[in-house]
Image (tube, rainbow, N blue to C red; front, side, top):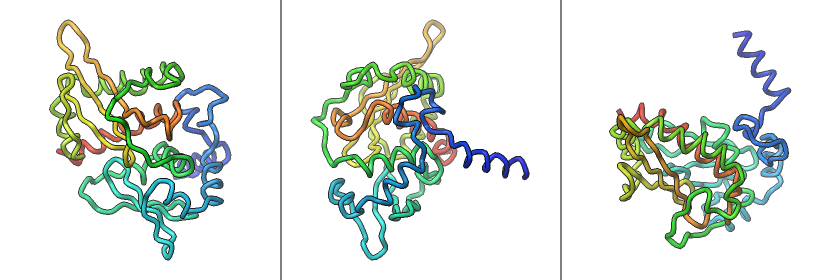
Length: 235
């Protein structure tokens, strides 16, 4: 108990940013602590956020409504308290993961409502393709491959639990929508005795409108980090 209290106290006194946890460079915007984004959110106009992102805002309750990975969440303003609408998924990353909360508050502050052309792109093909490519490859591409490349049945069960859209790539592939209008495809090739499993992650081509390189590295980490928890509910 005392160790938990000391750890929480240490985290408050020496906050660790998403960038630090993912190994980003010292000048990365993700190193800015949660408090910075929360302060900016508290100063923002929630109606402007709602209009810009074309999402509902209840002025009486001071609450924004945003869909994240298929679940509808209500986010209070100015406190940024998060609650989900029950949908049977049994795990709600926007309530559980600091990465997901930072990613979402950044989207609320700077994102835009937009639709892609239908073309999907790799991380490398984005305008800043080489930025954080090593981190993205290690934390997302390789992690996905070695977590589920030899467990395709588990991967399929999780994606079906999320009501993801199957797509015709690799040995198993699904498309999910992280925020309205922003699609991600996760593709797996099963390993065998000769070759290790491999994977790819594709993004709809409108991502640069709302997200920077480090945001996309974080969102890959958020999604893959959530799969295990979703998997428990899918069993």
